[in-house]
Image (cartoon, rainbow, N blue to C red):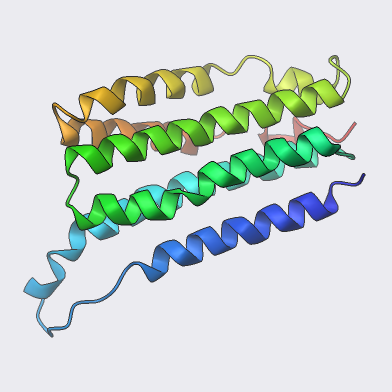
Length: 193
């Protein structure tokens, strides 16, 4: 089957996820700058999650650009990815509402780690469905940034129970790492087979 419905559905779900996240940001009831101060953790959580979702959306877009067709396994792998991605608004709101308490910070890391794992599984299912020598397979093959990210999140989750702010630095650091251009994806490195 063609990939267009998968792309449109995924883009729609991701747009809804971002919309749900922004709806959690509510302004203060008072008219002073001091009333904005409690919104700081919520806004910081939102920024982190917005960037994280944007990174996954961008990579998902490039990934699907490299394929023409999908099968049932790809559809289910994509749904698995979207399931974990759809949990981000809840853990974002929880983390911001409780001002980066260690439990929500750890759960946030676990959810984003699972988003990464499910995305990696989607890549593997797509490679298995296509030729193992295709540009897609070469592009998603060895990704040191992905493995570094998995290790950073895995280390940050238990660290949240000791130093939640340092854990947040790790989360922002991983996001910043993914904002750097990826030579494998940029500049037409991935072409549809």
